[in-house]
Length: 163
Ligand SMILES: [Zn+2]
Ligand SMILES: [Zn+2]
Image (cartoon, rainbow, N blue to C red; front, side, top):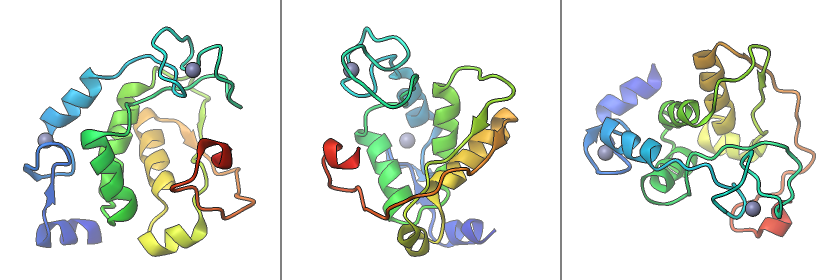
């Protein structure tokens, strides 16, 4: 409601082409979906199965990728995470919905917990909003069984530090 009121006062512009209306117009959304590839999410090798190639080790077995963080996607995430564009959760949940296959009916959607100071700064928990929308769209359960044990900020850190 508040977001809607704010967006009437300060209309959103498409992260891809700048068209007034929403944070991602139908054309730019289509372009991102059209470019989706089944590559390794770590090294982007094209021939990987399950989203992770044999050379890259992760703590999970399967992964899906919407796209590299560049262009419209990078701007959209930037607006959503760092510029209080709360409405970005819609476009991002839409893109996840396109990227992920049909999941088992008993699958549970779990957002990665956000640093609490960031939630206070933004006024919303960005991963939670996306997870909630995505779960609702797919008719899946969403739960928050994970808690952060540190509040280390990951932005501008290396992959090794993040791990
Ligand atoms: Zn656009
Ligand atoms: Zn890889």
